[in-house]
Length: 322
Image (cartoon, helix red, strand yellow):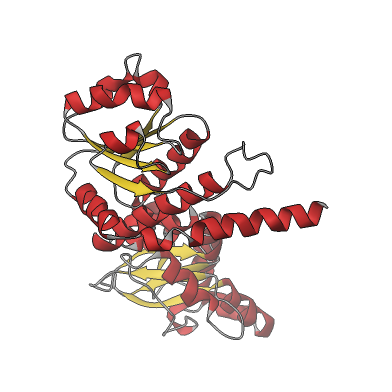
């Protein structure tokens, strides 16, 4: 019984979404083009379960390049209509098209001068007659066996809202970089917005040693900075190599007399480096692709060959760069 009812619910809701496809018609296209002309915000409103769906639609629109917010129709009737301007477009959601709280604010929205797009299952309703554009989200039946709880109808409305949002972002050529700007706290934002400059150690925290300094001096500098490596520079301060704790350990295993030798004699002359304007995700990729095992530090070198910083693998992982 449990499995059968669950499967039946999904089939009914899947069918409701599939039946929306023929409704992506000329009026749907006109409604999307109308939103593209909006000079201000798209305001989504709806009562009850339609309101919950409306909040999600507004959030999706806002995160994909269409400034939008949700307006509760009951609160709107008690002052929040002041947030609506003549340059806005209101998407009103009501399966029946007769939700009293929604219907009551329609004349005022019209008087303000904002446009109205209806998402409803009843074109002959008050909402259907009052709107500028009608998007049909009606369903043949709800998944609820009593036919009372909004189920298939809310699923269909949510899907149609996604269709509107994706159509809009496609026409606007909305990119993943644009998306990241609106999601700076998410993994995508970190991957697309963080540059090497944002995560590198610089200034006093950037370990640098001169080529004629001793290996002992380099060891002290690396120990002080705690990054396990130091950039080596010539007399003009230009980058010429990298010394790491691994190099020091291997040399110590052979002979500790090397500690008084110039660091240029033991440095790695052709290390992997990266520019400060490169993405942090690129730095991580470069580190991880190194064989036989990932490297842990990358000197950050500017266009004039100055060692402006150093980035450590743990810094990238701590920032959530993936």
